[in-house]
Length: 221
Length: 83
Image (tube, rainbow over all chains, first blue to last red; front, side, top):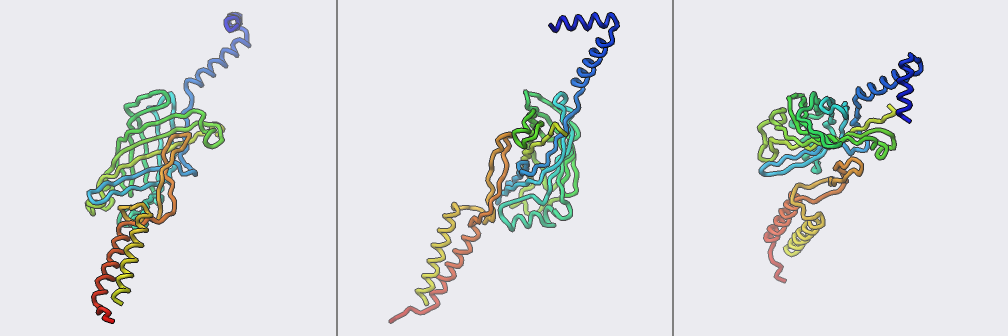
């Protein structure tokens, strides 16, 4: 049947038939649109507070662990070209939380994170290298700029992206896709002027960060 | 007074140990919240859920033990009741 239709199109083309040419042009446009599909923009703002960053400081005298849930930002992702992934993840520094209230007060205070003057922590991904695709899972190194307390440094962090096509409907009851991003990396607080050199026996210089976020891209947008 | 102070010291010690035990013998600082990790079914992401709950920490236990010692020590300042 398809062969017959193709033959008819061919015959029409030979006969310079207008409807045949139109169909062919439409097919060409459709194919090129598929090949050059626009990258998908994922929004990481999450009112359910599932998106989070965990931080761990393991000093000789004390181990501190905490969480942060005020995540926002967008990432542009093309399933056909994962290496071209770009975007920004922003963390509201006031959502940094540790279970001890005195410790939390000190952490957010001027001497440490100075949240009042530096309300945002952000990572701007500029390019992805060493991209390895395994089904819906993509492993790569994200090269970008990490900003904490007004200090911006160029960093390369390992990331794992999981593209969940059509899964947004199960989560938000809206048709669309989900992009899950996981990244574990370590920074030094002395690099970002977070009370450098002070109380390292209780608050380690190295801060281990575990980023666990999912972005949504509704198809109706 | 001597006996009363010793009873107070013993009560504080027993109560503080009991509260510490009920808090799960927590060996860190006191907490005003407890963070539990849950898993989002769709994305498989682990996320924190913070619950308002007081956890008795070692510094509180230490303070209670100190008060116990002060009460017990102060009890020696009073004379034995000879009657």
